[in-house]
Structure formats: C-alpha cells, structure tokens
Amino acid sequence: MIMSDFSAYLNEILEYSTKTKYALATEMGLNRTTFTKYLNGQRSMSKEVFFQLVEKLRLTASQKKKLTELFNKDICGEYWNDFQYTKESLTNYGTITYLEKFSSLYNKLAVNVINRPVKAGYYQNKILITNIIKQIINIETQAASPLIYCYFNFQSNELVDFLEQNYMVYRSKIDMKSHILFSLRKSDQHNNFMKLMRMVPLMFSNYSVYYSFSETDSVNLSVMYPYYIITSTYVVLISDDFNSALVQSDENVVSAYIDRFSENICGCNSFKCREINTFEVPDIVCSLMQEQAKQYYMNCITGSFCVEPFLTAGHYNYIFSDLDISAEQKNNIITLSLSAYNYFLQNPKTIICAPAESLVEFVKTGEESPITDTFGKPLLLDDRIYLLEKVRTFIENGGKYFLYNGADFPHNRMNINLFSDYDVVFYYNDKEKNKGNMFLLSVPNGLLEELSKFITYFQKSCYVLTAEQTIKEIDKAIEYGMDLKNSENSGN
Image 1: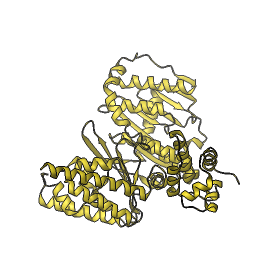
Image 2: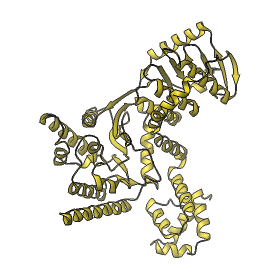
Image 3: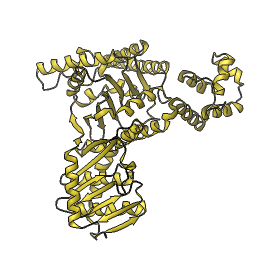
Image 4: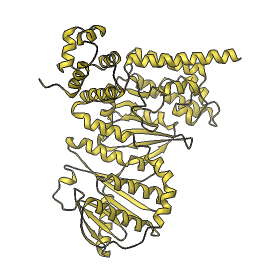
C-alpha cells in the first residue's frame, strides 16, 4: 500500500522523535492498532486527532507548516489544486485598493509614454506580445475618448493587472468592456470560477463584464486566433497559448471588429454587480428565501467576528438609536433582519468562518461587525460578552460557526457571504479610508459552486480550529471582557 505524502512525512518525523510511536498513542488515548492505521495511511486522521498529535510532538515551525499543509492536502484530495487557487484568489481582493493608491503615480507615467506606432504584422513570444498590447493600450489611453474591448480569458495575469491599472486611472472617460466565454462542461467548473474571480474587483468599480456559455471552451475550438484586444486604432488577435499574435491597424479591419464585438455583446448578458448598504441585506436575504427555485444557505468567510445573526431586537434598537431614520424604517429593518438570520441559523447548511484574532478586537471595540462599523453605535461591553456566550452555545449545540487562524489565511478584510448558488454579498472594509462597501453580485448558472465547495473544504482544513479549540478561544475572549468590565467598575 502506497502511503500518502502526509503519512510518509509523519513517519519521518516520528523516526527522529524522542517519543516512541506507542508511547505517543498512549498519551493521545488511542490504541496501537488505530494509531498504526493512521501512520500507514489505512485510516484517515480527523482534524481533532491531528491537532492533538501536533500538540504532543515538539515540531519546528517549518515542520509544523509542512505537516499541516500535507494534512490539508489529504483532506482536499483531488480538489487540492483548486483549493489552493481559490485560497489565493480570495487573498487578492485587496488589489483594487492598491490600484487606487497606484493610480496617481501611474497617471504620471502613462502620459509620458512615447506615442510611437506599433507595426502591423505577425509576432511570436508571449513577453513580446504582452508588451505590444501594453504599448497599444497606453497609446489608446492618451486619446480623447479611449476605447478598449477585450476577450482573452485572462491567461496573462500581468496583462490583466495592466488592464486593471488603466481602468482605475481612466474609468471616468474610458469605454472598456470584456466578454467572458464560460464552458458548460462539468470538468470546466473551476476554470469558470478562475475567470470570474479575476474580474470581481473591477466589477466593484462598475467595469462592464459580459458573459456567454458554450459546450466547449474557446481554447478547444479550431480557431487560430480565438482571443483579441480591440482599441480604436488596433486589433490584436491572440493564439490560445498566448505565444503568437497578429496585429492589424487597417481602419476597415478595426471598424469591422468593433462592430462585431458590439454585435456579440448585444446578444450576451452582463454581470449584475451593484453597491448596497447594510440595511438592504435582510431584504435581499428574505427575497431569496421566498424564491422556491433556489437553494438557500449562508456560507461565509468573514474578516471580522460575525455577530449579525445573533443580534436581538434590543441590540438592533440600540445600534440604530442615533440614526436619522423613521421608526417605521427601523422596525422594518429589525423585523427583516431577525427573520432572515433566524432562518439561516436554523439551516444545517449554514457555515460561518471568522478569524480567531477578531474576538479580542470585538470585545475591545464592539465595532467589528459591518453593521456597527459602518452605520451604528458600538455595542456595549455587556452585550459583547452576551453575544460571545450566545455564539458559544450555538457551537455547543452543533452550529457550524468556525474560527480560523487569520495569520495563516489573510484575506484583506474581505467578507464573502454566499446566500445561494447565484447570489453573493462581498463586504470590503478599507480601514485606511475608514469606509466599508458592500456589493451584491448575481452570478448565472451556479458559477459560484467552486466558492461554496471551497468553504466546505475550508472548514475541514487545519486553517480552521476544532470546535473544542474554538470554544477555548471564545472563553478566553469572554474572560478578557470580564476583566475589562471589572476594570471599568473599579475605575468608577
């Protein structure tokens, strides 16, 4: 029997350990047969057993990191590469903030570009083609009314970054559109997700992305140049491997491609992405619950301690007490919120993941919830402690509220709330601007299945603490809150 990489590495560690395998098994309360099966890979180790094992072994930081990664790889199996890509995608949502900071410098650089023409003709070499496209786009952005249309499925990250930079700088005057062709084949689900995630930050800035579906992906069609970039003066036709391109500057050719692109997107749909405020979320959730054709759940990875589902009417009244809204509006929001979140908390498919580091921050400030951070008054210390206790009880009763190690899994304060296979709310909190933005993205044909799958695997991984460890972290936060409370009382 071939052992997994995890089992092989674990055996290698144990070979040099001061503890015998059987002494270790005894310490962990396991019988020899069970422990031997773990070591041989005949039996899958649970996350609880793994954490216990790591605690008993004296590992270096590099050993612990490698062993944890191999264990996570065992959990994900064939989905490991997809899991890693999805993780990387979710950590890159902060790009748009970087682009906004970069825009002033980029603007100065762009206007100094030498406006020399690009020669029409045939080119080979991915780097050369990327640089030609960059130069063409730079030339175009100097025009009075720049136009850029693209369809290339985003193989070149460098080129996508370059397009994003240009859009962020010139979005007030640029006509920039993209068309994404998705495959209907089951085997292409993850590729579809990759394409979508690459464009999400730009959708937040109203970048227009159109989509259509095909039985096969465009790279499998017998077309020599399936991808292209169009400007008002150039067309660049690109091969599926991005290693060859045909540049054309004939006015008639350019005009024909612009007309064809416009004609194509008229027959396609555009992604629906709009900025929303926190008060809209309960209404959105309730409307989803009423659509019988959809499967509803609330799968979340948050960058803060998520308390909204556990708030009472009293909490909402306090948080909103200083807001300039009518009593009728406030009561409506509270009623909808209680209805929506109570539904999800009772739904066994609901998964909430929050960083362990956010617990103490929540106790200290009460502002880690998007509601209190964006709109209302911070919760009182007694209420913060009460909510921690409420979450603790929820977990003890089998609720899927998980804490993860934010140091191992940073994601730039982006909250992802997946309310169905089609509708997802992204919350991005830009602390430097002291501003939070929420966006509702409606995605067709279940394209977010990969994200839903990722959240399921994520809660099984070792980024996420066990229920026992989670309760310990909550207890420490409660104790910290009680110390703060005693300190306040003694100060009075």
